[in-house]
Length: 229
Image (tube, rainbow, N blue to C red; front, side, top):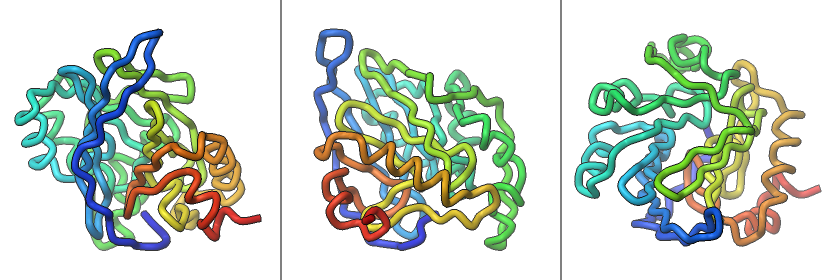
């Protein structure tokens, strides 16, 4: 969850050329802006797709069907309730899809206290089989590679996902803000270290956050008050 809510700058489809083992493959990114909720993203290579932080399963399924994509991975940047709402319905529709989450956040999915839904007056639980991912994990989407960055701080198991010159930052980094650390296992010192790691990415890297508008690493280095020394 963001410490600063901002209006999402609507994106349609980003088509990127990503270098993979000496050849180039096109990665399509279909953003599903969350408004006051969390943003979801579909990332596709050829006919395979991954969904990052599924919220509205109906919207996601509609895009997958329209584009003729087979869902291969459901990737969670962390286990807070507003990023996992569509997981169970997606698994029902695509039973072969693997739900992937960092081991540090796996126990949040079925626990309304740990996923903080109870703190917001809800009782959200998600009970599905999961596959662990860590900073060693790389996922292939028909020639497009997704790389995992371990970025604890907002939660103990927060991650970012990098592909080409795009990074999906979940609730670690936002346009003009950063993730809060006062929810359960958050850690200000871990967040600071994670943000330094993210800031090592090239300035032109586009940041697609879990809430709010898109931005770039370069813009955040210049303008984000939480990143100024």
